Length: 223
Image (tube, rainbow, N blue to C red; front, side):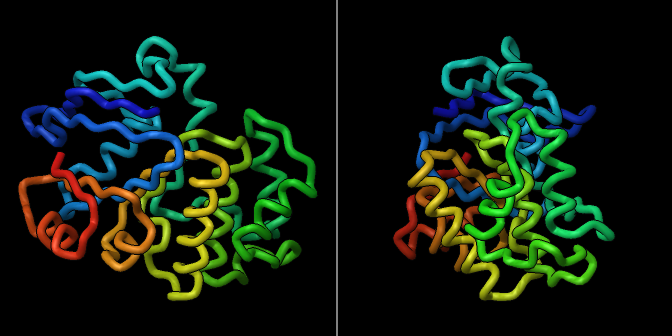
């Protein structure tokens, strides 16, 4: 279980997050929507332990982010919006490289299986030859090497083809349900949000996303 209570984030006089509270349980896929500048990426960065909130409490499996920082980090996977791969390396070489930096050790067969599960078959292909969709899948696979409980994705399907978006969405649904992961991700693609997410959180004062999703029968909460 992930619990966020009364989370605030200030940059000088600019308040980005204001009293944000929510919870998510294992097996949940949570969509995070809102206008640009609403604080979606900031919230993901805080949950990824890359930024510190001004105040508020976060716990994951009853462990406090503040008190158990080192123990919690291996339970978190984060995929930023910008693709972070070695272009001249093959898919295999990227996976092996990042496995060496991982908290959990995997053999090559396990690494390749991670890729195959999301239809990334080009194991020996250099990254610079891959399509945008294949690069996104590899970015995701790398984030899962250490088998995190909490997976955070910032626009994981932006700029890629429909087939790849559907494959990633289907994979995330299987991952959440079969392996009981907590998945939180941002997206401006409302079809994706409707099809993949169990629940949606709206950040910011604009009620457009809330009404749009509620009218289509999606469970949605304004944070």
